[in-house]
Each structure stands twice: as structure tokens, then as C-alpha cells.
Image 1 (cartoon, helix red, strand yellow):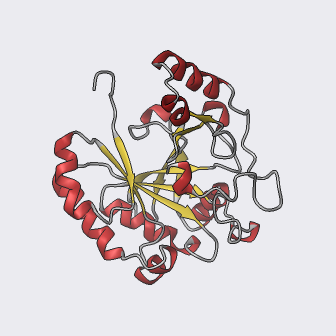
Image 2 (image 1 turned 90 degrees about the vertical axis):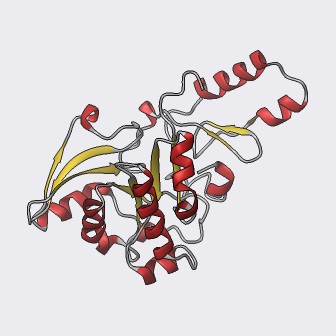
Length: 251
């Protein structure tokens, strides 16, 4: 498509073994794979019965198909995977992948999200430094392709291995002022912010016969009307969007 310069997909990788080669041949350029732990038992628990072996097979297939510098997304949850960060770092290093450590956001599972399970990425870097790692910020321009909300740091292990790691501080250092993300929900709404928005239904307007210009104006209005900060800490329950599942938000 004219104008499309970068095409990426976020996936749990369970179907990559079958589809990686065809996706790469079709023009998909980058992959973001969700993998919160490399412990098989914990992985099964976190994913409610998922198989880590399926994900590993998918990653192998993606590498064989030609995908490079795959990004691995790990959401940090105290008591679940916070003690596995060294293992995740080693796993990413061995696969020449870029690990991104993400603060746990209170979206969709309000009954589970608690302050006690939250881990700020600042403390993660401090813990790594205390364990003998060297953690140094790098210029955004030197980070991986794709931009996005992560701040990238060079992490050197006690044994001397070097890798670039992304830290996504969605709650403690929100990046709302520079956010370049927008979602189209499963029911056709423009979701300009994870914590708010979603009032503009492109589906309904298209069914009513809206022109392309009118749809474009709706999108423009939604994006330029974005709130100046998310509301995830606004309520004791964990935020105004706590009962909206990610499957409905798109992502």
C-alpha cells in the first residue's frame, strides 16, 4: 500500500509455526511477541493453560522465515514473574531479540489488579544495578525500529553480554504527551486513549452513509481531543477503563 513504511504485528506466537513463512512473504516486517515468563508452569498459569513450547516453536519458525530483532513484551507482575527478569534477559539475548519490560496497567481485570502486584520500571533498573548489571540510557534514535512508548537502555550483564532493553513506564512516567498510538475497536470505535475515549463509532457512521471526508473529520476530532493524561490511578478500583477488556480495545 502506498505510504505504508512499517508493518508490524503483536502476537502470542502460538500460530507462528504454521503461518510465519507466509506472513513474511506477504510483507510483514516486524513481530512483537507477548511472553511474560520463560518458565513453562508459570506460563501455563499466566495464560490460563497456554503452552510455552508452542511459543518457542513459533519464535523458531519466525526466525527461520526471516524475521529479525523480534521484540518480546513482558508485563511485570510482582509474585508472578518479577524474579524472572534475568532469565528473560538471557532468553532475549540468546535469540537476538529485544526485551521490553512493561509496567502492569489496570485494564480489563480489575479484580486481579492490586498495588501490591505493581512494579515500577525504575525499581527494576535499580535492582539490576544492585545485582551487577550496568544499565545505561541510549538515545531514542539508536533504539529499535518502530518507535513507540518504550525508553531504551543498554544493559550489560555481570558476564559481559550486551543488549538493548526497552522499559515501558506507562504508569510511573506516562508518555501521554508524545503518544502516537490509536486503536480501532472490534465494534468500530476509535479508541484514542486506553483509559478514555471510544465515543466515535466509525462503523455506525459508515452504515449511515458517511463520506470519507466525514469519517476523516471524525478521526481528526477524536485524536485532537485526546485527554492530556490517562486516568489509571484516578480511582481505587484501578482506573476508569478497568472493566474494558483488551480484546475489546484492540491489543
